[in-house]
Length: 218
Image 1 (tube, rainbow, N blue to C red):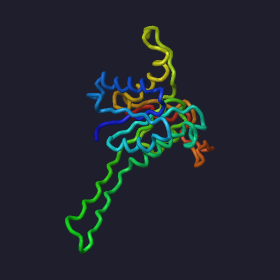
Image 2: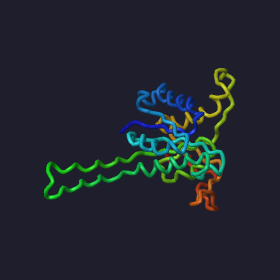
Image 3: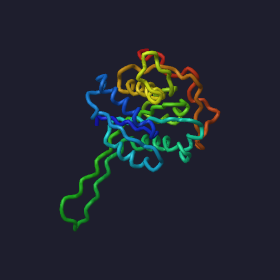
């Protein structure tokens, strides 16, 4: 399926994600809003149904927002974001078709058709706050880090409120890049350690300061 799904994990970002999707249409990056759906996953209770919902899309973009190292634990208050990311990555891998059950000698009628194979889906992790949670998406197909979540309104931005200025600009830019408006470019301003099985950072470095894409065409 050529459609995309944006999954956001913070309930207070609903309007800002909608604005980002509207920009994809207004800038003709996608032809219509029907090509990009939006769904919220704002608690651990939403994870299973969000994974099920995602199966009808070709690309799923998961927007997470990390505030501290404790968020990395799936059992923590904000850890559902990374439980969701893990579940989507695992579910998105193509599954072979299930074999049809054989009929016994006395069975009647045609044998049931095998269950269809599950197609692969692309998972893109959009890290929208502290970039350290990119360590959670090493199995995703791509990772985009917005780094900052705030900007100051420019002199001509009289219509930019404090609410819209806090998150939308960097998220919208990341989504436009994900959909092909601009080539990805940028480097990491911090060193990102890897994450161990206890969902804490360890002494191993995953991405060095300055890692990233300096020149997409190189």
